[in-house]
Amino acid sequence: MTTPSTPGGSPSRKANRGAFSGRNAFIFAAIGSAVGLGNIWRFPYVAYSNGGGSFILPYIIALVTAGIPLLFLDYAIGHRYRGSAPLSFRRLHRRTEPLGWIQVMICFVIGVYYALILAWAIRYFFFSFTKEWGDDPAGFFAESFTKSVPAEEASFSLDFVPGIAIPLLLVWVGVIVVLALGVQKGIAGSSAVFMPLLVVMFVVLVIVALTLPGASAGLDALFTPDWGALTNPTVWVAAYGQIFFSLSVAFGIMLTYSSYLKKDEDLTAPGLLVGFSNSSFEILAGIGVFAALGFMAGTTGQAIDEVAGGGIGLAFIAFPAIINQAPLGALIGVLFFGSLVFAGFISMISIIEVIVAAVQDKLGMGRVPAVMAVGVPMAVVSLLLFPTTTGMNLLDITDAFINNFGIVGVALLATVTLTAAFGALPTLRNHLNRSSSFKVGRIWQLFVGGVAPIILGFTLINEVQRTFAEGYGGMPDWFVNVFGWGMIVLVVLMALVLTAIPWGPRSNAHTLDSDGDKIPPPILDRLVDQGRFGPAKSDPTIAGYILPDLDERAVAAEEYRHEHGNGGRHGGESDSVSKGSGSQNAKSEPQDAKDRKEARS
Image 1 (tube, helix red, strand yellow):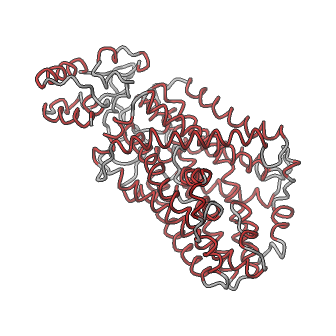
Image 2 (tube, rainbow, N blue to C red):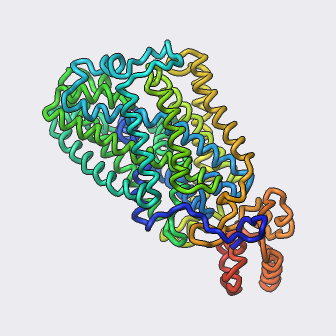
């Protein structure tokens, strides 16, 4: 293989990044990241408001044609290039490095406000025992608990709410401790404990909810199909949007996690398991939530559409109202808010890990110093901005903009760049197929390079037009411009600044991977695809990389083509280049021919 060179020649130092002990540890961590707050409080309402039972069809199609293919794309990049999001994209091609830093900055923004929701859930877990919210959960949440100012009066304030600041600090302490324990003991270990607990708690919650009077009415409302909705484009956009947001694609999370896998590990089978496990939990959440909403509708004499909702309103207003009325209400509250805490905590660990991994790679820092360098400043920012009277408005606008414009935008940019600009999909496809039991081919490339960009582009354009026309949430224009659009611009600018900072000699850009093996070469535009190794070696975009034996490989390739009368081009850089050094130079010509055949197919 080939690898970045160092001033002193070929690298000899291994990257000390940590690793998962095996596939099961990776699967628990990946499912833990995917199963988050959105599964519990977003999916049920999205499904209900977009056709009910008929929504399952576009949802499954979105999972198969976009969610899982993009999950595989993240796995392929991280596993092949053995680094954090910025380093993996840099190793793929220098010009794609900003994509990795945009993902890091997205995780920074999400991390600082995600902790606030966890702090709320912790407080409400304890409130469930005494029903402290009283007879007016909506008034309690807005006025007594968060002390939030109305959206139309949104502004920046440092008017702190101690009842939120203290649990928020505890959340950050817990996250920092778990991350400091490392990839296996911290991330995998916590996922192995919390994920089973989460599943057990939620299954019990669903069983209890199904025993409530009126539960069947809620399930009828959720699952009764509106087949006419399938002709509505917004329903399909909603299905793809739910898949994008719930599977943790384009965050850098799955890319980072896959870089901690062993080199010969199966990638696609775990990806299928993660994708379908995430969707199964969402459907389970829909059953539990709407069974409870059916009870609430029957108790209050309202229609389902009057009590159904999603997001913060469902969790912190509707469910407390249900708990007030339901038999075993305290048990429902403990199970529901406990599930929110567990699901949110595991997801938050994965979000912050993207940033920790990037700092480790960029600065060559040890695990604990990198966790402290990331966790402490993020905790300070989070504690300054969010446990305040304007914290909920800040959370609302940053969450909407970073999801609708940040994540969708970088996913669109990545799929178009890797497909149209660098022709990277054949190489990544071959890497997925190298050791995976479920093989991917041109259909996968079509989904990643065709279906996903179309849906992402439509979604992004639609959201931009709507937000410019209507504003956001009734908030003042200056507030939307500063904390919405301004935050998106800042994310991009910071990504460009971080890209411009050189990777120093202590960084992991100049190391072997964690196993002591060399890193595969970058995707060299379409030069290597065409067998044009001479121009590839002089390409200034890959300055700093050594490509040994390319001339010899070119000669061998030309001889093979001459012998077989084959002037066809390679379908990707594939492994015929990446296997051109070290002990693998002894590979037989038939295997070379096999590599080229796979690349062309």
